[in-house]
Every structure is written in C-alpha cells, then in structure tokens.
Length: 603
Image 1 (tube, one colour):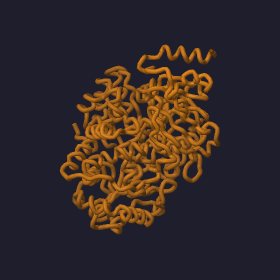
Image 2 (image 1 turned 90 degrees about the vertical axis):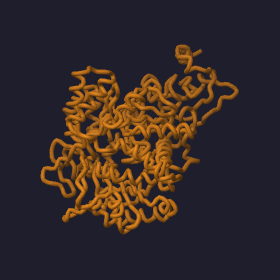
Image 3 (image 1 turned 120 degrees about the horizontal axis):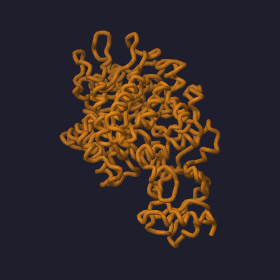
Image 4 (image 1 turned 90 degrees about the horizontal axis):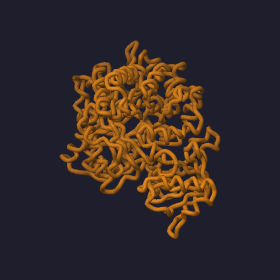
C-alpha cells in the first residue's frame, strides 16, 4: 500500500460514520485535470464518491480499491473538474425574472445598443409571447443600461408608449435599482405630477413636473411588485425554478437569495418539496422587515435544499445609476443632478445601528449592501459600536459590493473582521462608465479593490449580483483576473489577482463566508460531491481567454443537474411564463414578497 493510500485510508477511518455509509464508490471521476482548491493537494487524477460525499482523492490506481460491481466511471474526457461554485451574492429567485422577460441587455449578453433596438427587442418578445401577454396584461423587459445606449440616457415613458399604450410596460435597469414605466404602468401605479417621492426613492420628472417614466430605488420597487402580482401564485415559483436552473447552468451548486422576505423563503421550500431545486439556496431576509421570521428560521442546516443564513440590510443604491451614497460628489453624473450631488441613503443611521445591534445581540449573520464610501462609513460606525457593546459573537458580518471604497475603509473592515463580497465584474460591464462619469479616472482604478484586500491577507468573495448581470461564472473569473473593461482598458492593474486566487473567491472563500467551508468549496474527503466541469483548465489558458471557457456539466450531490449537450435553458432567455393563478392568491403572495421591499418606517 502506498503512503498516499495509507493516508487516504486513515482519513476515511477518522471520518464521521454519516459521511462513510459505504466504502465502495458509486462514481469515480477521472480523465482530465482536477483542481481541488485544497492547498495541501491542489491537483488530483481521480475522485471517488459514495452517498453524495467524497470518499477519496488521489491517483486512479489508488482509488481502484474503492471500486465495486455497481461503480460507475465518469470520464472527464480531457475537461477540467473543480468544486461547484458557491454564490457569494446574488438573487436567485428574482434572477428568474432574467429568464422570463424580454432581454434588453447590451452586447455581449444581448443586442440592445440604442432606444430603437430596445423597442425592437420588446416588440419581438411581445410577438413571441403573445398568448401570455394577452392573458396577464403586462410586458416586462430586463437589463437595459443607459450607459450602453447610444443616447447615453434612460428611455422614457414616451419611448415605451411606442410599444404599447394599452398594456402596462416596466423595463428594469441592469442594476436592478431603477426602471422605466410606460404611461399605462404609471397610471396603474398611481404616479402623476402630484405624487411625492417615496422615502428612499426618486420619481424623475419632466420640466413641467410630470413623471418621465424613470423610477429610482423605492419608487421603482413600489411600482414593479404590484405589476408582478398579476403573474399569479405560481409566478413566484416560476421565478425560483428559472433562477435556480440558470445558476446551475453556470456551474453554481450553492446559490443565494440575497434579499428575501419570509414569503420568498416559503415559496422556495414549496418548490423544493414539490419538484426539487437543482442547487442549494441560502436566503437572507430583510432585517428591517422580517426579524421575527429570521429569528425563528435562521439555521446552519438545510431544510431540503433551502436555509435561512441570516439577515440582509441595504444602505444605499446603485453606483452606475448614481444612487449609491458617496463621501464626495459624483465625478460627471449623466442626468439632471444638482451641483455637488453625492447620492443618497435608503435608510437612516439609526436604522442601520438598530439592525446591526439586533444581529449582534442575537448572534445572527448580517450581510449589508453598501456601495458608496458614505454607505461604508455608516456601516463601519455601526459595526464598531455593536462590537463595543456585544463583543464578537462569531457571526461573520459581510460587506456586499463595496464598489467605491477608500483604502482606510478596507483597514477598518479587516479590524472589524468583516468578509468582503466584492463585485469585480463591474470592471467589465461599467468600468469605462465609472472612469468617465461616476468616480473619475483616478478613483476608477480602485473599483472592487481586490488587490488592497489581498495585500492585507484577507479573503474575499467575487459575485455577480444577478439579476444585475448574468450569473456568468467565467465572466466573473475573467474580470477578477484581468479587469478588462468593455473598451479593452485595464482598470486598476494593481488590483488584479492571479487565477487561483480568483477561483478561491468563487469556491472555498464564499463557502467560509456562509459557514460551509467544512462541507463545500474544495474537493476533499468528506465534503459534498458538488462539482463543475469546464471546457478547459483555467490555470493553463491565457488569462485573456478565461471568459471563453464554458461550463459543460454541473453536478450536485453526485447528480448531474446541468449538461450543456442536452440542456439548452441557458440560451433560452424568453420562454413564456408557465403558469398563472387567480388574482386574489397572486396578490397575497406578491404582497408578502413585497414586505421585503417596502420603505422602512422611521423609528
């Protein structure tokens, strides 16, 4: 017996019995590079799996001792296997909206380049889904980006009225923080010249004070959600299924619903019980609206494939949409903004402190959306005060996004023990926009400052925030390594990291972020058999071609949940919404869903 096999047998002997219900492999994976993301043994020739757990990792010859009569061989055929990707931050339920609406994304993810092509995309989607549109009487489009339109401006209600004045239309900005309504949708939402801006939101207006159709933050949320109520009680389930399938198609075996309500979590549980989710979902209900639900349901263990991981707090909005709270004026904002405009907070400092205190007092993880420097200042102050009062409960607080960070704020987050879930994919999608309009050419280099983080020896997560962008794992990997913008510029060369670091930020580090490093994030004995198979080895290709790699197979608990050869859902972006329900049931479900989106009441 070789030394390696002796070590393997010893490790198996020391494993809990639950992880070793059998010593014969169900499946042996081999035939291509295997990147384990385990620093002690970073590469392997073969992996043996039994009862959904990894039994052994090593050479194919060594693993032959685990072969039985029923053992199946999975031939990688030269492709590369890694641990399944772990979602550091996304919105898997509302990500279903991405798969069930008109695709208004700019290239390379769509074909919208100006307002005329946006109108064409909407009209084409309406034509392809005429029966559904006729039945539900709504038109929804997702992903337009004024930064990528030739006009460099938002469409207006008049532009959407050219598609229809009879059916309400709502199109969602790629940031997910803004949208545009046609005149019918504004009428249904009760928005006219006399309507005041809601707390934490803005209704953009024409010179005469009449709304122009562009709605920011809570003005947008409060208009969109009642429209979605028309989809019926199965609509939310359809979103959950479509979102989970989309995540699986990009190699994610653990997804996140990064801002939920209790109703959303319960819908996820129903979907899982009725038909099964292809991937795990960790949900974070809104701390300002669902504290009782969070406290009663938070758990490190799954119910089926769903669990509540903690709570979510949102301090500000979108950096590319100029609604993130900065500590200084925006560089050159495009739109009707007053001199010295620096964005705004969606909540008060008192609300932030109360939310953070509640989480620390109860030992519950809090993940906080803070994009601008001003928002991070609010969060750092609140976390520091909570730790002074309650100590460190080991709840691993998380900063979500942190697009605009000062270097001193990274130091503060390290001192406070905050995990940074960053958004390097912004450098591709909006890097040029940040350089030219949001923060300017100097500060744009430090968007998503992964270099600063690693310089301090900190872990980080690299996320997609879908439905803000597709949960495109290879685009995330590419952006984290190269920081190439759409124009080909390198935004902040000193903030780039190597490929293996970027892979850790998609696997073992976000697993740690969510208290799952003991069972996910690397290919090691005893861990769950969650794998992704790529078309090539990301550590062996030219970094400039990382975005060209493809997810070919996704495996959850040793079961194939996505296969590129047979499952084409990833490319099907405009299927009809599958089921509808009675309006009263729809209202109840979407009203409950809206609980997590309502403007928080001031204390």
